[in-house]
Length: 213
Image (cartoon, rainbow, N blue to C red; front, side, top):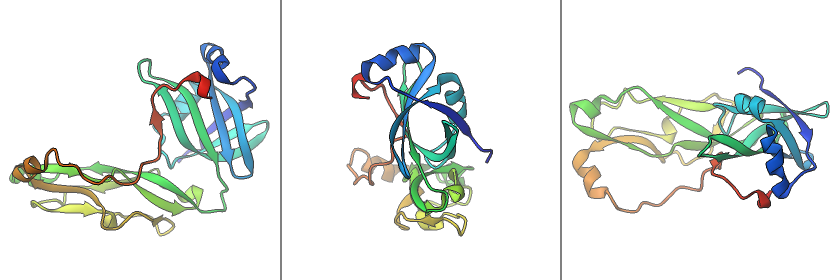
């Protein structure tokens, strides 16, 4: 992946006053983590939006602040969903020589034959898994081909995911990623509550009151 560099300056304005910064085309953010106290920073809204587009929770970025580069992960993006603009970003600085844990998106590709041949229903399970690796070895996403699901009951589980030997998957290997089941079974289970997995890492959220910054 091409190195993503985001230029930042220290930010002294906080609270409700950041609204003026946004109107001037700036994006308030904060960086914290490896040998770095929580530091309010300011980004160019246009440049930062372009740089962050398409990045996942395990995508590594470089924050250039006062001549020093900090490797970081995007831990939270607050967005105004009506206007579609970013409001605030949290970055976690990391050490490139220390393993870290991160949530990695699981992306499904292909078409499961059982859906057409047996009128099956495709049921999604986990959309991301927790992994541990050096920051530069973190996959942006794990792609899974579902074209091998040819019969009802066929599924893909965490144990089936293929990753580099530099990456350790920490999620339960028996957790389901996807499965093809019959429409009748799906209807009987509809409305039943199922135990939820651990709360996923926040990457997107709606508008937050400016006074909370």
